[in-house]
Image (cartoon, rainbow, N blue to C red):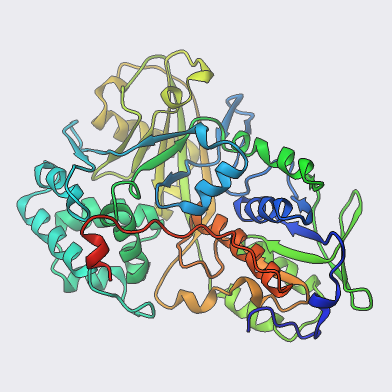
Length: 482
């Protein structure tokens, strides 16, 4: 039940003139919850164990190359309504570079461009798909058949994997390798044998069918942690505070006064309410140090069902330009995405070029030793961009985010608790792994923070709307999606 507390009416009894909230975790989920609640009049303490914000979507000074780099490339799309709302709230929406095209490159350099046309949704992407040389006629017919099937409702509790669904809908080998395994599996960061069909269908509808605006891709033009520079100012302007380098190892609940105490190395923070905005593995570590609660064991069982998938990124600095593209999808090889960071971030004034290469959902690549991974990346990159061969590699960094995302296999929704399902009084859950209806993305994290803020206010009988609704389907999709 939403807002239920085994401690009775502690939530409603602790209303004061200005209520305080401790948000534990400074990732996207925690920042979105903290900023929303702070603007709503709560005194918020945003607590982060590291010295910077962002969690798994952050940047740092890499000592090996003396450059500020993102831990891996995080893109957003026009359908990421809550992430965009969060960026607008902290005043950084102008630090996103938007593109409507997806450039696919085959070994040898042949290019295909997917993107919108003036046709109404869901037909807006059809002209470029039909002319894309990366797909054979059989591939195109396969994809058309699959897209038509996705227009029909797919049960949210479907136990079918994407791999089985693709076989059942007679997808060609080219369509599977060059679209489903690369584009969709990369978006969900898992292999098709481990993806639930409803999540794949959501990605297809949002990125390729609902509207051209929903499928636009956004890339940060400043380092990720710099993107969050407005958070501390927003909190301070609203009487709230940011606590960095503050590790939380245990929490204390005082039932008599209905207050939480959050001990950190520097201080003890007292708050009326808590928002746990932690990755699932961090929440699992904290559980044994929490006060006993009837729902703690079921929550631990839910967390135990989640599994990590890695994302790796190779950061490469060359003595010359190797491409004029902003970004590209690379086909048929171990490497997947290219981002021209030097061009997207001209403030760096990099001599030559700075390229970031992403590899999603590849445990084999993540297991490679650094030099072998860089060597493989350079060898494959040269197959797409011949200028790599004569170029000199000035420096390189390899980042392995082994806990980048959680998987979305069939049945995973049963392991995703709602914000108000926290077992403890006056507390709420957030994080991309909670029940948001989205896969493991920054949008899911931002949405979870807004859901937690809404549930907190609802528990106080003071409902507020923080969640930004999904973009509505446009064109013919308004009729077809009913």
